[in-house]
Amino acid sequence: MKSEADVRSIVEELKKLYPEGICSLDYPKPYELLFSVRLAAQCTDERVNQVTPALFGRFPTLEALAGADVSEVEQYIHSTGFFRAKARDIVAASRMMLEQFGGKVPDNMEDLLKLPGVGRKTANLILGDVYHVPGVVVADTHCIRISGKLGLTDGTKDPVKVEMQLRAVLPPEESNDFCHRLVLHGRAVCTARKPQCQDCSLRPWCDFFQKGVD
Image (cartoon, rainbow, N blue to C red; front, side, top):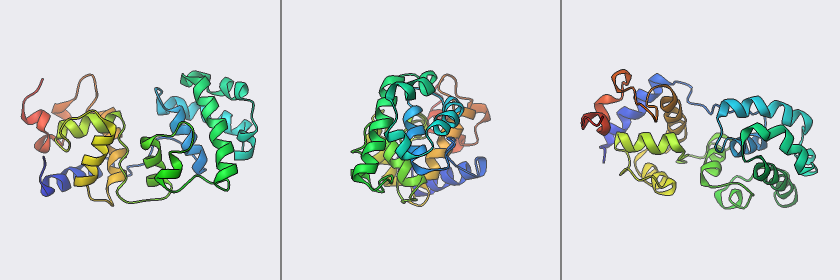
C-alpha cells in the first residue's frame, strides 16, 4: 500500500490535471442528480445529459415525476438502456421522497439506500456532491480500476471493499473530488482497453507502470 506522502502526491497531481474535479452529469436540482446517476447505469454520462433536459422538461417537479405514468417516462429514457427498471425506480423514488422525506433527497446513507434503485455508489455521490459530506468515496468502474493500478487498494474489484480501502488512505476533504478526477483520468488517459502510460503523469506512483505490466 502507498505511503501517506505518495497518496498526497497522487491527490495533488490529479488536482493539477483536473482542477475542477466535478461530476460530468448536468443537474440544477439534487433529485435530478439522483435520477441522472440512476440513468447512467450501463450508459454514458454524455447520453444521460442528452436525455434529461426533455425528461425534466416534461416532468419539472418531484410531484410531476411521482404522478407520472411509468410507460411515458420509459419513452424519454429509452436510449439509456434498462429503461423499464430505471423508469420504475424514478417514479417510485419520487413518491417515496414526497411521502417519507418531505420532498427532499435524504442527507444520510441509511435513508438514501431505502430509495428504489439507489446503491452505495449513488448514495455516496449525493452525499459528496449535494451535501458535501467529507470522506465519501464513489467507487465506480474507473475508480476501482485506477485505484487498483496505482496501488491505493489491494486490487479488489468489490466496490464496497474499494470504498473502505480508499476511505482509509485518502484525506477526507479530498476524497469526493478525487473520485471525480479518477473518472476524468480514466476517460482521458488511463483507459480500460489500453492505458496511455506514456502520457500519464501519475507514473512515478503507479504500481502498474512500475511493474512494467503490459
